[in-house]
Image (cartoon, rainbow, N blue to C red; front, top):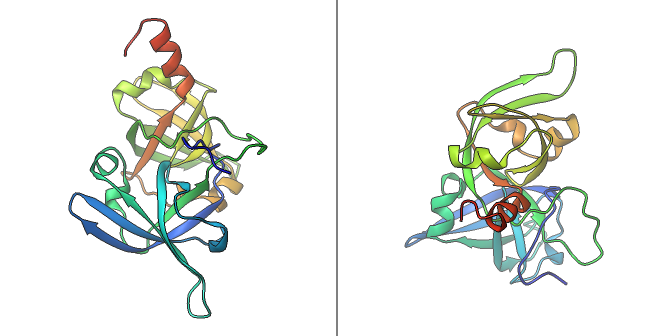
Length: 212
């Protein structure tokens, strides 16, 4: 059973591949081939997070001897204007997570799949003597107020801990498992990520009479 208003944990299940991109007016229909999520477990109408963006499954093409199976989602003008999805091409990989179910462990943090803004990767470098990779990301300036050291943030749908914050950027460290299980390490400097800040920070600000 899925929530009507889906929520996620930011623990990516799979990295799917875009197999078709069909523009329909101001919207785009994407066909996605999951690598690890069994296509038979998906149902039309459920929510799946794609690089941090919650989209509804609109159709399913079952697996066959000739094909591993795909499903489709539609991204409307609002979604395309606020996220990186409009830049996806056939062959691109996207981080996938199905919606949280009652009784599931909440291993990451509360993620809604509603992108707050797009951040730019300004640097990436391994930690000296270690296998971790540190990314520095420049978010929209208006989002910096919600990003705090050791707080949580979703980057392309991945729940991560903020290592440090300065006047213009924040940094995160990716362990080998995260690099293997997600697409974050594939993005080059100058590339972009969908960002979702901690929703609790926004609610607290509103309740205290801050920015609405």
